[in-house]
Each structure stands twice: as C-alpha cells, then as structure tokens.
Image (cartoon, rainbow, N blue to C red; front, side, top):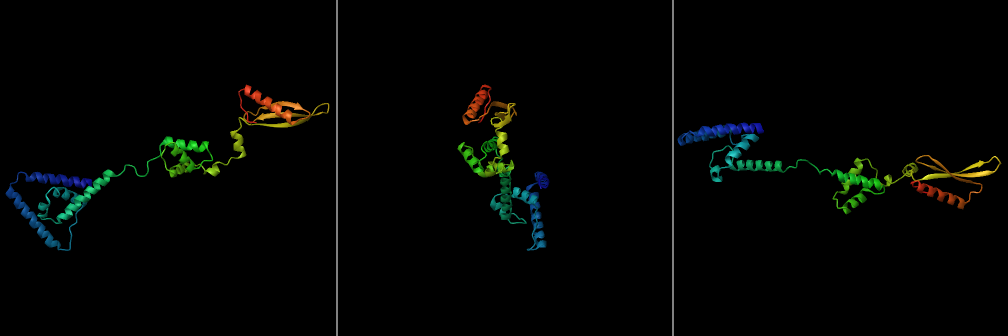
Length: 244
C-alpha cells in the first residue's frame, strides 16, 4: 500500500508541475473536459453501479481535496459525494493515531529481575508461606506487584504450594542439620575379667567422626548429662556448634 501511495503521489506532483505553465483558459478547458468525462462515466455506470476506489486512491484524494473549503468541495464534480471524501480523511486520521498510540510491546510489562529474586528468596527461607503471604510482605516493603504475579513466578520456577513445600522428610531434616546434630548411643561390651561395660559414643553426621565420651558399668542419667556437658564444652573450645 505504501509503495502504491508513493507512486500516486509522485505522478500527482508531476501533473501539478505540468499545470504551472498552462494559462487559466487552458486549465478551464481541461476542467470542463474532465467534468464531461465524469458525466459520461456516470451515464455508462448507471445509478446502481459504484466506482471502486483502492485505499491508496482514497488516501490521495482525501489529501488533495480536504485542503479545499467545504463550499468549494461541494461544487466539484466528483464520482463520490464530498461527505464521503471527508469520511475517508477522518478514517485515515484515526488509523494514524491508532498506530502512533499502539504500545510497542503487548501485555503486562515483565517483573523486575530483583523483585523475582526477592520473591524466590522469601519462599525458600519461609517454606510455610503461600503466595498471598509473600504478596503481603512485598506490600509491606512498598513493592507493588499483583498476587497473581507472585503465583505465576512460583509456578514457573516449579515450586509447590505452601502445604506441600513445608513438608519436611526425615532425610531432609538430617541433611539440613548434619553439621550441628550429632547422634549418640551406648555400646555394650564385656571385659576380659567378665565385667559388663557401657561405652557412650557420639558420631558427627557431617564428618562421620566418632567421639568416645566415657565408659561405665552403671550408666545413670546424671552420668550421661555430665558427659554431654563435657562434649559441649569441648566443641565450643574447638569452634564448633552442636544441637543436643
């Protein structure tokens, strides 16, 4: 369409240049001839037939004719009514404004990467939070984002809903607490003299290191508590932490 319109514009420009050296008498004669040709064309087409104009023809005619005053436009001998030419011009203006006001990118703007990272961090650090709780925390921080957007981000990252995400298996618990949670138990043995002894041993899950806290023939509660206190003191001196 643009190529056709450019061609029509160039030909019309050359036609206007051709009229410059012509006298007013010659122009009046050409106008009378063109008007008579239009009359002949209308007589051949009849009252029911309509002349078909392409979009390029409409654009060119509306650009040329709308510059004339309304009264002068209604006095011209045209194949269409003057109101039709004005309607063509209004339609072209609407299309031009629609193209200029059309957004470059359709749909909602993408969520800022830092906000996405914050949402994922809140969810991973708080497994019991659902998308609505995360949305409430973001609103408290002054971040404006829809609750549905939070839900879409969690879905896209493959994160389960809060009840399923908050469920922790025993294996997950051990892995998360491996560095701070030792396991302890008694080892029963018999000496060469036939005496029964109980050895209290502790194993660290992270390093698989075994610590022997002591041995006794009568493992009472007070003895076990004292052995554990000694273990905690030894770990603190070594710069380790333990949850006992």
